[in-house]
Image 1 (cartoon, rainbow, N blue to C red):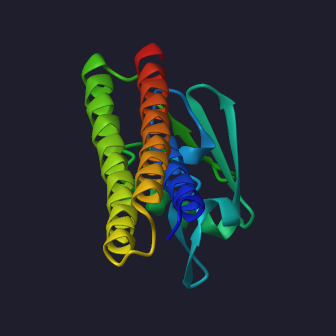
Image 2: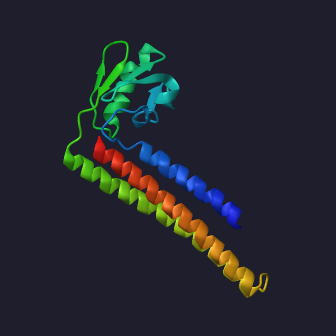
Length: 182
């Protein structure tokens, strides 16, 4: 694996990190909280975004309008079984979720969760770096690359990893600020 491939892999890691953080509730309603919930839909499992329109009419409300009214009960059941800790209201047309304001304790707990997630992704980045480093060491040992090339590539590798680590920190800080301010 070379450094351009590493960059591609690290970009994928960053995208997964962003997606995972987008599902963490920050006190305001967002469709991302529910769109990936799996719902029993005519005998199969479908994500909520595939079977319903999801609206956010105000910062504390999510409205879910299934394409088929027959699935309202299944949508309700999926929400109740999820770890969202929200109570769905079925008005016969849509499922409405009202998000209560978050307590300071909940905010602090979410900040801890975000920190743990950030560290998980930093570890993934370090693991990717170690794979490349092992390959470089092997190439150096087999005399496939010169000592100078080895050190240049090692330096470029570390600069790349540092940049992606900084990006993880920036994303984490932004999410923590969202949690604190809402």
